Figure 1 (cartoon, rainbow, N blue to C red):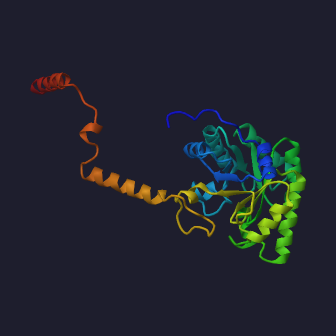
Figure 2 (cartoon, one colour; figure 1 turned 60 degrees about the vertical axis):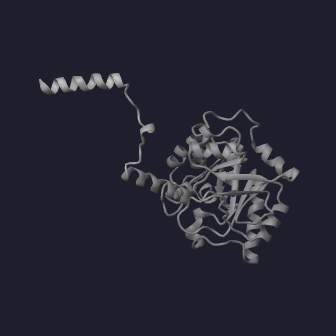
Length: 292
């Protein structure tokens, strides 16, 4: 791909809301850099999420918690340069909105003004309602996120399915409703039973975006690296890899090493050449200097 694809209809927050009204599914993937963002955008994916999962899949952290707003902003800018059509949403990292509305607003404004985000995503339910109202009041669209919220790993005791009991299911349903009432334009449902996700989806007027929440959600999101087989370790139950780029890259790198060690790379056709006349002239000059 030598140039960007022709201009296409831009996906906006109102367009995402209309998908729910018309019963049209919404597609979303994470991206953390320019080439990945371009590939996702040119494939026609609706929402590109610069997720805080970049902490693990790109930066090598063992959780999302160490990620900083500065690191997120760096990757957000790269993604923004690769996207023409999709709606660009940025995660607010852990610690960037927990000290109060002022801090959250400042971080979100930086993501919009300096990073090019068109919305932000915040983990939490009823406890984020007031904050979401504040951001929406500042003209910043907000996507919610409930169920398994990775930033709450210590409180939850690990990465486990949420909403298995009636009590927790009722809490999640109330959280989802609170997000809608506070002005969120969509909500991610992560790692909850399919039946609960279906009920939440029917109850809400805003779209639900599922990840490990069954097919009844209004849309689906996955981590890009999971989709193309670029992760290390065991994948979650809900991950469906559509390619095995990890193995393909390993094979390519191994072949490259073998070709270099075996003097098969670079070949003559992959090398630059002098003309015969220039080579003869240079060799004569070198020979003359050597004799003198």
